[in-house]
Length: 463
Ligand SMILES: Cc1ncc(COP(=O)(O)O)c(C=O)c1O
Image 1 (tube, helix red, strand yellow):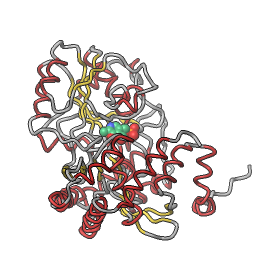
Image 2 (image 1 turned 45 degrees about the vertical axis):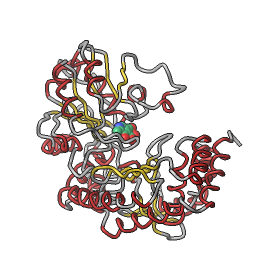
Image 3 (image 1 turned 180 degrees about the horizontal axis):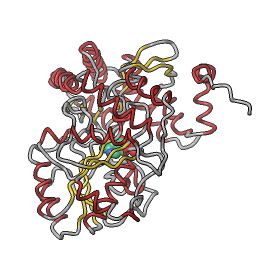
């Protein structure tokens, strides 16, 4: 039999990278290409290393988006790469299915050592898949149907996860969603108690810090929620898919408030930025109710879950975090950024608040007080709520080579979720860039005319 010549992926990339927009316009999501062209993000990234991206001209960018939070230890970390190569070189018996995975056993041990109040792990392939598993397990374990979730929550976009999404823009057009899902305001214990008191709720699913908007819990909220869940026989589920693995300066964000959820959901950073993976950590009693008989040994699962590459990426990530003291760095750099960015607040009437924990930071803007700025602000707000933030993120990108995102639809908050390996020089870069861009937004008519152009583009449908 002929053997295939190995694909030279690097050369394929180099030869075709300039066609990426055309390929996507013809074969994938054309709207995404339109968005990128409109905001001027067509720089052609060609390399990623650590916290930096490099475009086709070789210019260096600081990545404060980190692939929606997957690059906690930075891009292409050599230790993760070496672990993945060692899996490929070892001819391991991957995904036998009628066996159990050694590497999954080891990763489960290591995760649970970091979350000692939980005893079992269920592996999945993504964040949303972890949420799906949590919903099914909660229903199965409690015999109840209801799931409580919060306004502005984001737990993923598959049907179960979407049913817990607190933002209409994601739900519209996809209904009907899962029945018996009850939305309550975040940070509202009275609403939670009202939802739980009929004892029909299987679970309360909550992000310790909401990703959309970077909304922090009140000091007593999460502990109070845990307490109410116990009182009414509801499982308390922390979605730490974004906040977990050191993002907030502790392994789990819940540690800041001393909670011990019945289930903890992880994904994103556990991948090492290379191999998709999700993990549901839980109490043994929950696991045992789902997998309760031999004929139900495969009652929930997914073909690729526990694959060797994902398990190796997870173990290598945890190792890097420990050896390189990545979480301590996130706490330190986060404190510095929060302090230095907050210090800008007094200087600018459009800048309202800087908040966050560790390296999950929200920079919130709001209506100005001076008449001149107010008029421009109102034009933008009327055309498209939240558009102002683009007047910050676009110049950050174009003029200061910093990649950020707006913290959700119609949001006035710019969100920073950089790799946790950020250094002092990066922090200086960020603060100087924000200072300059915010200053410009207070005076330059060019910035506001960019807003007008964006409004016109946003209003146009398909070309
Ligand atoms: C808190 C939270 N939960 C769940 C998800 C869904 O994860 P995935 O995109 O891997 O499905 C996300 C993704 O952004 C998230 O931030």
